[in-house]
Length: 222
Image (cartoon, rainbow, N blue to C red; front, side, top):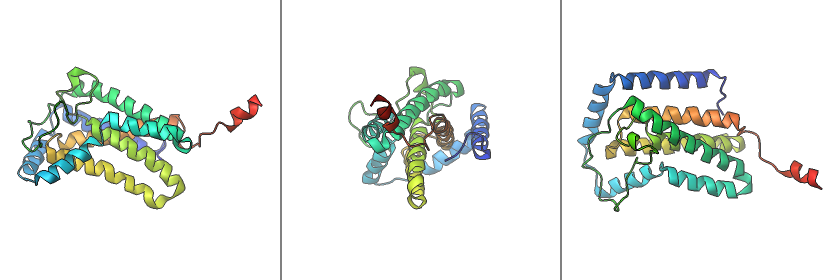
């Protein structure tokens, strides 16, 4: 687990601030457009595109909140579930305010997106309507990064061998969003860094590494 006073956390925070400033002043726009245009030349099969849609939808707030509720119901993962839900909601709120401030327009409508059910949209879970036309930072990436960090930290307490596998989720989602034309690369990097910052902060404040127990309260009532 990363601690707030560590050099690692300060470096992540500083990098997010630097990237955000560069994006705001459009200093990375040419790089974003070049990468976006290069990826747009690829034409994956429809089945692969649907796979990308499924992977991208893993970052939807409602899906991660639902997972958090399941964790909360299970006694052993109750604290992790509560921290996860609080963190996901906080990321959604922060992203909704950052997007109109940075005002990086969404990429052009992607011709790659397969036919989706009516009313179903990806990367559209911003709380503020003003934020829905902008793409930096990516809410999906921030949310799935927080999920990977929180769940991975708990797994790491049990075994370090498998905890790193959780980071496959953010990487897969970032690649999916790039191929679907939902985000620029800087949107994804910003989302990744912001997700790490908020997940680390909430994990420290709410003491993710301290097991949740109610035995002491039960003892007082007896």
